[in-house]
Image (cartoon, rainbow, N blue to C red; front, side, top):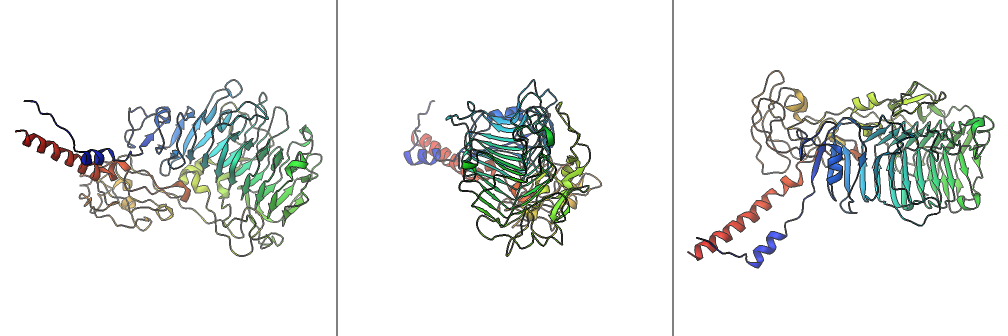
Length: 575
């Protein structure tokens, strides 16, 4: 017997009002699952990057991804597409191809807008991070913009580290750019490049060192504001050992450059061709580049070696220049700038810098907070057929960074107070950042690890799953004092570390953030999908309580219940 039925308008309206839920994706270098909502079932980076849409988050687990990250779609201002390192992970996107033959960018998109990248390392490509090139110089074409990049590293690339072309709103924070620009076939190379960038552009807390331009010996700066990139802001940055300038401006006005540190850049020497003396700061097209600027609280130490470093400031502005300290040669204002780990924190006797800055006027409320141990004095190891220069002295210590729990652990900015100090660092040592505990592959995380206290909005300790190791059910991962959750777990005691545990008792499920794994004999046997991690912006390794799919489940089931009730009633009425 067939039954015809219809939905009442109120019930239909209630059903279609169910909100769309952002998806979480987990990827790994060997991932091949068709879908990847958990760490235990990762898919490939390429498949997630092609399918992710507005509001989605793609989590990259640790390992070497020997493929580029090409983003096919766009997010929105309210719901960007986010690609971020998984909890305590250091994902590395690397190439072993010839950077001159293959001009591929590691992280790129031809049209993607409102994109966020966090905690990703790239090396061995032509360019590290970059959007679409838009038709050459003096172009009126607008490219794809609205990108935010934080806690990322771009090094050992043939051309540039971070490049943003012809588009609005670029934000780069707490990242590292180094050893870029050794290609002899492709020029316009610098650590961080803004080219015809518009809107609001911010570069803050970035370390850019030993970059070059080996084709023409013209660029190779730590930072460059190029071709009408007006109104860009640079705060708390550090540049040292670059072949060109610490900071170069071309045809761009209204630049803000506050509390930065420049040290012994301009390393081209007699190789420099345009300009022949790049100095530490170079204002080319001076009639434009000195207009409306704010340069304050910066410490600038040039090499003092002719011809490239004898004049630290080229075409210094006549206004908008306050409380900057400029010198050449050796200096005693830094702790150990040439040490085994280059340390640019202020020396105790740095009386010309401590408390000598100008408050307000763009002065930041925190400092750079960069851990010197993330860099080490040794011959740098290069990738992707990129050769090092003999004068380069420092390398990025990826092993140290990985052991600490990712790039975010290199940055721990301290609060500035009172009259600001000059330079990227405030007076005093950088506070140590603890390592963190990786998330288990299969079990849910609630809050967490040693970074839980730093995670804004962490939701509680790790719930044991009766696993065979501490990280998935033993004492270490049971969510001790380091968890930052506001609701304690109620799932019972964790399993023992020595043998397969009996598993925690199921959580009540009534309160968000109290989710326990099912009884099992192996790590990650919980029956709830793992929650994505807390923000790397806060350096934490905690996780959100549950994905949107889980948190909306009760309301969704309720709607289906109403629908079923309506159908049953129709059927009963018709006999």
